[in-house]
Amino acid sequence: MEVRAPGVVKLFGEHAVVYGKRAIAAAVDMWATAVAEKLNGRNISISMPDLDFESEFSCREAGEAYERYLSEDIGKIGKDYERLKLPYMVIIGRLLKLTKNGTGLKLKISSNIPLQKGFASSGACSTAAAIAAAKLFGASLDYNEIIDIARDGERIMHLNKNAGAIDVSTTFYGGIVSYKAGSIARHNEIKNGIELVIIDTGPKKSTAETVGHVSELYNKDRKHAEEILAQIDGCSDDGLDALRKSDMARLGKAMSRNHELLKMLGVSSKGLDLAVSEGIGNGAYGVKLSGGGGGGIAIAVPSDRELLIKTMNELGFKAYPTKIAKDGAVSFVGPG
Ligand code: MEV
Image (cartoon, rainbow, N blue to C red; front, side, top):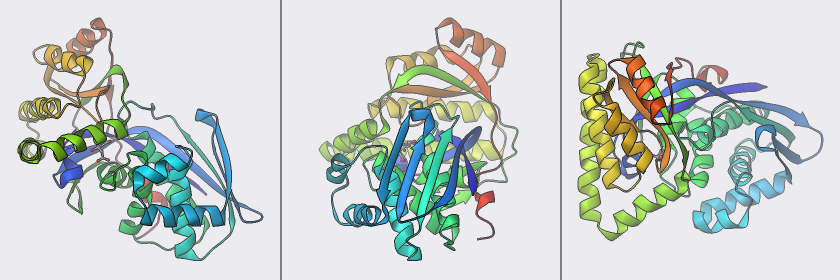
């Protein structure tokens, strides 16, 4: 059983989505692949050749990890297990409990989605792995259930129980997807012609770190944080309207505004800010960081693609156009 799931860029609303605001994202044409095979006995073997990672654990250990995840603080159990292993232990532990199927499983996860850049590579890997394992165990799950199971992997990766919704929903469905407070919407009404340029500004902080930073800020000064988050929500609403009307200038403006608000939350970086300030007026209608931030990628709506790419390359960034992937991992699930 082989399942593929695409990378994701956030058009609007990252971080704010963790606090019940809207995020909008697009699947991009880069892929994680999970291959699941039956293994004799009751062991689970996981390999991620791109990361030189291999691990084996029993069905019982997966079940225990899932029970601990349900009842304990996520930060605490995160410290007791290997970082790369725990998301998959929990996903598989939950599937085993649901299906009462204690069969052994060999799971190989590979990906051509750049790591630690802001493309939701872990969300795509969790989603492909959850679907492949569910299929192998013979689980019949509805779409929301499978998305929630894959999200457990992201909740663990980002050490926050409200994380993972926008990335997993988008890699699951493909195309343009929005998420707000428990509701997923697919935006097939948006013409698939929107052009985006990716600007890679270099390495980024882990998303767990930037999500943790916003959480600290929120706990310290909730009123101020809520004001910023509400304004980000406004950018998402404005951006969605602009997307529906194919108004690229307005879309870009809303993105740049969203970037300034993310900067106020403390999740930008010097490189990202430079990409935004130099991009606007040099071939971009608007530019914003995309994903967890603290480095990594920015996305831009180009008004003059060649000029924008040249400007970014001269700054030492790697800039390239990207295509929205219409398909998501859903095509591997069957009717739901
Ligand atoms: C990370 O790709 C997106 C964040 O909003 C965290 C999350 O929602 O999981 C920063």
